[in-house]
Image (cartoon, rainbow, N blue to C red; front, side, top):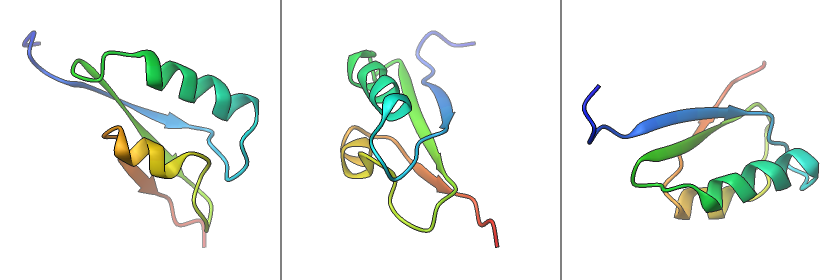
Length: 68
């Protein structure tokens, strides 16, 4: 792997409600070097997940899984 290649990690488990999982993932996301590692998030809900606006501002993508 090229040393300049961005590593992308898909995070699963965020809900629309800010709780323990959301707090942990966001604390890690805010602390990582986003020029080397980028988190993306899977949304399985029909509404925004917690911190979605901040995630997008920090460069993360939100992917939607249609459960219908």
